[in-house]
Image 1 (cartoon, helix red, strand yellow):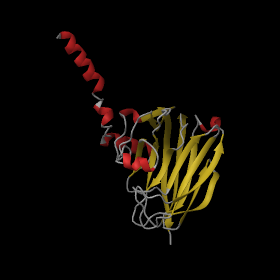
Image 2: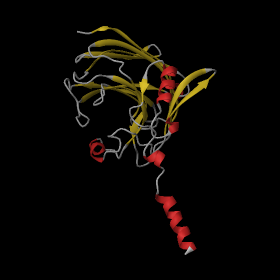
Image 3: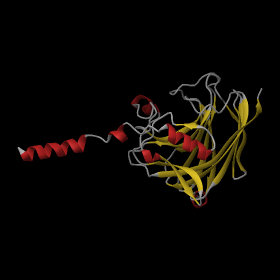
Length: 262
């Protein structure tokens, strides 16, 4: 009997999941305030993060920054991240995500200049590891990727179409814009990104890396029924073969409204 109970206890330990990971980590308001202070903009974690260590405030040389870490199997807290019907449309098992978003920052029919610094620390070998999004809660007008196919690619997917509304499972046209950099140039150092955009139905967008244009005056659609906001962190597809751990740091975010459009 004692041996049977011992084996039963072992089975229970083996099959009961870690609830902190299974339910993901709810970010406390105090942590949101600290991260907001470090980044320079008000943020909120509307979705649970995979782990408490998915987002951390750190320092280097007395300068604070915010680090995001995503490991293999870190399924995100968004309703679509582990939804088989949604993921089947995009040919993936699930989505891995550790992201935060800005809170009530962008207005429609406005012109903005957005700057931030990001540092890729490790990983980012996947096909579609997004590190910056301009989102609407449905389809994002911008998904900014980092990927590795023997060479390093920065990819921007820019929304075109869905002028009124755009649902999760809609598949509108995206313009894909690519720039190639040596991996050794991108990893381990801070880079400054500058985004100039118009949030109207028939807007334009430009992105600059360290002062040099990646693309300029690219047409972009902001659906009229959705209010845009920013997302920072890592969002990527889960992989049956396993994903490498990816780590990215952020600091010095500024969002400046420069006028109205139209």
